[in-house]
Length: 487
Image 1 (cartoon, helix red, strand yellow):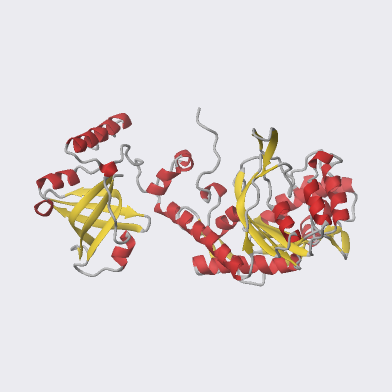
Image 2 (cartoon, helix red, strand yellow):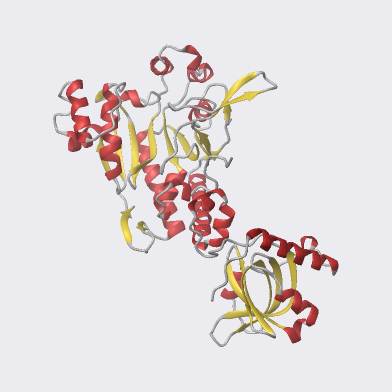
């Protein structure tokens, strides 16, 4: 009969007693040092019978065979089996090895061999205890499923779920390849302030913080844009930044209050050159990290639920045209009241205070954007949505903008930057509703010194990772997503 699990407090006390016993023998695992010669994966990949190796990692499995023991040691690269014999280690060392707990860290030296079952392993010659885990791993060591624990104690998730760790290792590779792509094209990486006196570059609720030394409030930035444009004024023709933005708004499958953005600006470019940049960047990342342009999303049983083909050229469609496809060919010909009524009938979420362009925006967000699984550039958005972009010559009710939608969500907006200081001031004043304190005067003064024509784009790193790595929640690509603190 299976024994009921021991209470956590009892297990912790047992491990503390083991630590005390080790220290009584003059062994303090937290003071030991060890230098591995290679990773566990490298030891397996470079297998040569009898080759001496030294690896280090966490004990993740323990099998007692009497006078011999098998354990699994895992590091970031993977796992390898270690085989220990009493006649090799001696009584005292073998006893210490036998009483290792799951979660302990050890360094192991020995020679490579293959077991009868064909498993590449290390025949242990000596080991060093490097850290004692005082708490046991999650009960279901491989496959931690408690969502609350997974997000709140991400380190346990990384220990228990190798696939989760792989997602975050690939996220790191994605960001590295983004940098490589931009550096190769002459872009300069910069850093701009995260605390700003006036939060600009987007319409969002900021987080407020107090600067004690200056005696005034600052705001965590909601966008990178306005400081990067100052650099265009200063003569830096190609700049980019990968950094955190903060928006004091809701949480959802697609939204986290703290998120990572790439913004890039190119003098003498426009929204069309930004299309080429975004398409080239995403394809470069997919090919170099995943070795494919065909991305499959799968459910928990491994069944493919959607397939995204990133092969260029990507579809391009005007905002008004795609709205007409969904809401009716006469959508922009009927009265604002009729548009509102039709939007409600179609199932869009329309608040009473919405203006006419916001009603159309609600139709796009609820009924159109979620259907754009394949890469799509939606261009020429209403001018009210993007006050920092240039008006479209052929339709001054729109701006030279695109939203790149993939996987049913926007991942990259971009536009031809407004560099007329007079028109820019008028449009920002209109957006601010006459509240002068919301205007970034320093940015407007910078424009008055002259900014070259330019294209600019932003790309949501978290949403890009969701799309490329087959994750359906933004929390699954952010190591430590925001959660309400435990009381």
